[in-house]
Length: 327
Image 1: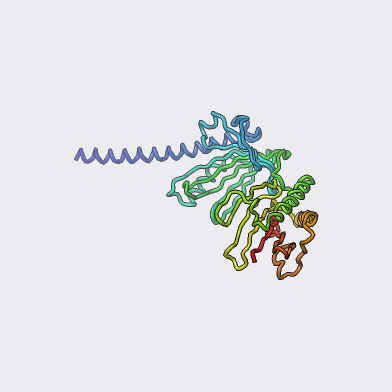
Image 2: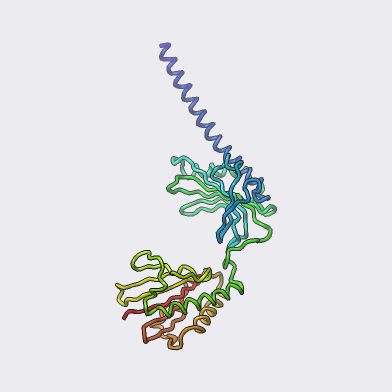
């Protein structure tokens, strides 16, 4: 009986110990998250200067900085970036990372954990909450300091958890994503030159099915262009539709996205003028809706069945295409 009682006591002691360890582990994780976010919030007004070096690499959207040894010790996956102003947001510095939680957690558990851990760290901040089909967002904002805390849930191949972003908006934008806030006069000049170069090179090689313009082949029907027209005309390629009812080869490029109806109208006129200025005189403008279809403008040369087409996608970007019909 004594042995049995001792065994029961041992089991209960072990269960209590495991429960305590589990509680402490969960508390430790929560404390670790709170500590990381608290440090980031404290460093936000200085653009996280203590946590990044001067080494960085950039693209057209941001500058991503190398983090310091100090930061990597307590947050090895943290990233610090200067994100450029764009169509929707001003320039901001961000401190971001991901946190995984047990797969067994319900949505309610995850949201309760996020709110319980993060809300106490941002007293006086304005909270915005949004629930979508694939994610739930918490956003805390403090206008006086231009700082924010943002958290969003995710569930993907990496697991179940949430992303955290601590940020600080600059008082004035130093970097803006090109074209995101409209075309400058210099951008318009560059676009005009790019369109005219596209027309000259494409039309002259159309009867050869754009052989000299074809670069790397993705497959037998899709080729990247061998020539760059700069940042104002991108997504360039040559395609063929040899099995279509009307077989054809097409060379095309796209402008950047446009941001307003006024800008769309202005750029539409600019592209049209640029095309007309260099298009050979044996092209005729097509206005018959049967042939124009969804295009804004089209010009045809019957002698070799080549056309130049301008269209736009739901008011965002313009596409410039040159067709060579094979019959």
